[in-house]
Image (cartoon, rainbow, N blue to C red):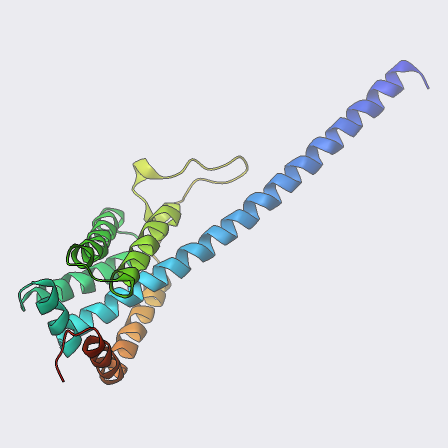
Length: 214
């Protein structure tokens, strides 16, 4: 084998190796993008469901909410304020587009749950009371970090990796709105239908914690 043929063979091998590495990297990026999207929607579902259920519980309000507000030292009308803002945050977070409003909704949700944690810790409550809002706050952070490019402000969008396209224009198709809004309606329906059972369950828990006298 002469030298030019050997050089050609080595060059071809290097080219094949490069293509193999690029293909593996593309597959890895695709897999991570899929995992990231699943994690985003999982955490988003958790916080949106909590916001919808919380808004229903606060706007009714159920006995548990009133007992908890008394326990923490907040006025009765605070439940209505929370309920309205929780409903708005749920819509803003799950709906497409609206990146600036989403930023405020995420911030408000985090302030809500972090304030609940601090409130319970301040008066000496145990893990069973401040653990749930801590979990919801963590889910809110995860959802915010994992949100896709079309749900971010332009200045905060992640730079696309090699071989990936930048985010296109915001989604405007009716289906893009119908699916999340339909899910929101379902979550509100579930929250309303399960309200009596939730009220009874939380009543028992409030009694066990000494917030309600039997």
